[in-house]
Image 1: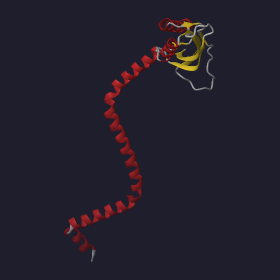
Image 2: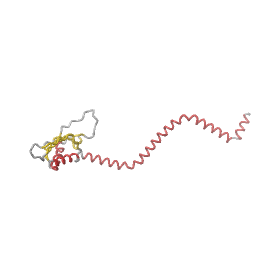
Image 3: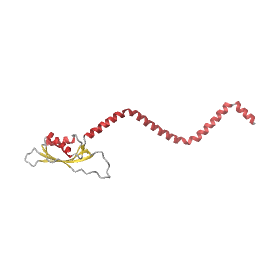
Image 4: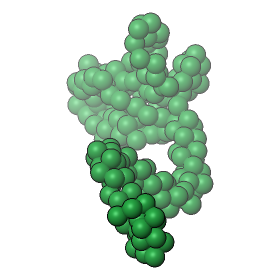
Length: 186
């Protein structure tokens, strides 16, 4: 076959020759790019995961304003229940209100000296403020006082509690000594 006959054959069968050339080009391309397939699958999986996350975020984003409002309200409710570390008179006034509400007699309410946390301790938003209380009353009155402390307007944690009979000879009177912490801000 001469060059003239070869060119005539190509012109006569142009569509078939073009298809064969394109098929060979596609085969060579597939062969050369087949080593990139595992990497492409990993990238596809990452992009699919990112796409699912974005779709979930878009789906949940319509609730963000309601959730933000709820969080702000919850933070405000928590802040309203905090005591101020440096306001000794107001802090003790809380205990005197409890004394009048429960008909007990507080003999020794005092705020324990507050010490700042060590420098390398984790920073917290709230500070526990210690108090020592001694109250006198009946068992029901003292339990009411304790219940109001734990469920009252401030967050309270009872550290120690000691209940003993009163020194006077009235059998129904008891004395409770409490060491508590109220959650506060500076």
